[in-house]
Image (cartoon, rainbow, N blue to C red; front, side):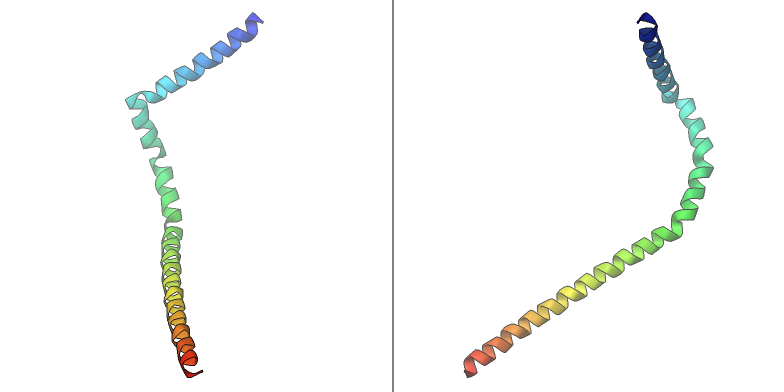
Length: 89
């Protein structure tokens, strides 16, 4: 029982030591320097997909506006058409 508690306590202290090391400013800077090429490569590879996504979102927005405009015109014409039939009948 004591061995289990010691093992759990040791794991917690090890995790806390790792977190303390990662909080240091020099370690943060080294991590940034280490991962900068990887992040740049990922962004370079994803860049075309970001442009495609932005273009598609813009096209969808324009299409929704066009559908709204067409619906408004149809509803307005339908109301005018129904008023003409009512006045003639």
